[in-house]
Image 1 (cartoon, rainbow, N blue to C red):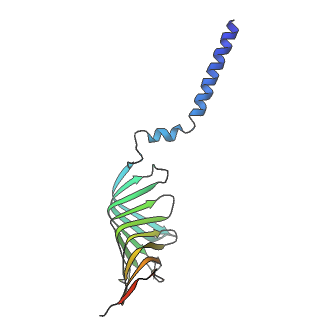
Image 2: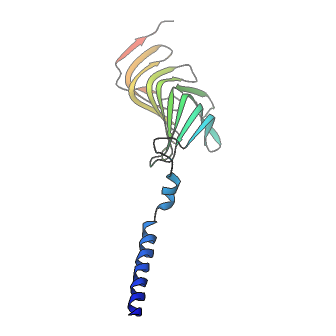
Image 3: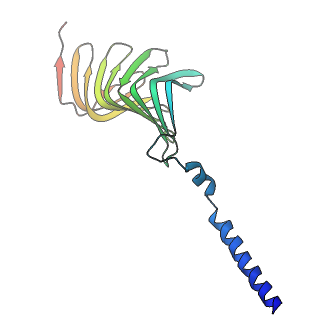
Amino acid sequence: MRKHISYNIFNIVTIFIVTMFFSCNDSFKQVQKIGISENEPIGVDHNVNLKYTDSGRVSANLISTKVLDYTNRDFPFRQFTDGVTLYIYDKDNQKSTVQADNAFVYDNTNLIDMQDNVVITTHDNQVLKTEQLFYNTGKEWLSTNKPVSFKTKTDLINGNGFDSNSEFSNAEVLEVTGIITLED
């Protein structure tokens, strides 16, 4: 009888240990998230200055006074609030400036998503205004599918979208809705 009882206890303990072993497969990630809501940032940074480089050359510089860190999410990102400035440098080190109220930098992509009152001033004083602009740091490419107003030296061009490289040598307003020629 004792042998039968000890055999049952051994089986129960074995089942309990195996169950515990298999139920703890992702516990470290769960422990990291304890007390942190996915709706809340895991950190707040102030006076941030991020530099993007390509072969040792600074290609872009993102500056903001406040950054919320949401890298605890399944699709991690950082939100730049309270105004953001992005300096874009071309191959000749000429600087163009993008300003916006907010920006999002997604860790799994090369995208910076500039939003709300976006204004680009190119190195040769052309000005583009829109509500959203994407900058691909890997391809050094700017684009939007939102309405834009692009002021060149001679024209004010309105359209629904914009594509350009960081040098603005092939800047293109998409779905042009109007061109106004400016007089000096």
